Length: 336
Image 1 (cartoon, rainbow, N blue to C red):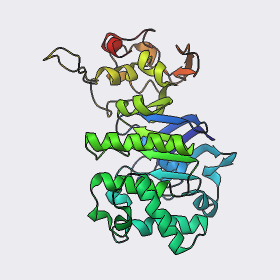
Image 2: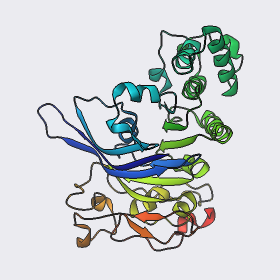
Image 3: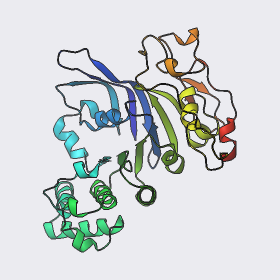
């Protein structure tokens, strides 16, 4: 359904050097599949999705590569044609519903606007569909809520309303950019369960962008791990959690607190910060933070190499000179 090939995004700052936020990212999404994009803040996850949707400012960003949706390149598509696709065939759920929803328009009007634009239905019919959508996403008393403004809803309800807007036209591809970041754990679980049910019912493919590996474990079929603008590991969900091969992925999993860990046991953080990096054109960007780095990591031609997948179903690709050995690390033994 979607094939992103060698996608790169460069931002130009006035009076400063250009910044490469995304550097040669490639991945695919099949119909009905849930693909995860994981990484720390600043790894290029959100910029990747914004580039695919054509939402980056043209004056300050340069986008290269291709993003083919049913053999139509979204990156080279005229703005008018891409605008007709957005909301109808491809929709996006942003991470902050308060800033994504228009504060001066009612929730119902923001849903009916999408329906009237893409489905050419009348106002009365669009309103009834909006009420049904709010009911479907679990908002109580939807006939009253359809006339309320975003500030009158709780955080969880606003996120559900944003999902209703995105699903109004039953899109074939849904991009979720950290949709549960600002929610508490209970509401987060409810929203994720809602997304899981809607994807199953509608047959919609989904890209889930997150830094939370727990979200990936419960939702995604395939996972792409990003670091410093590049995909460093791509695998099926089971392979990724059972046998992470890139040292960055291994570090992400090791840093998660475990309920069965002995009382008082410390966490195992990844050394340094995402700013401690080097350019991919010189070496592995993760080398300054990697405990296994060596002189062999200083090379500009580091490519994604195929590894033998444990499940035998999804190709396992790793961009690493010293990949972790096959077999679950000790901190994952109890979760296998």
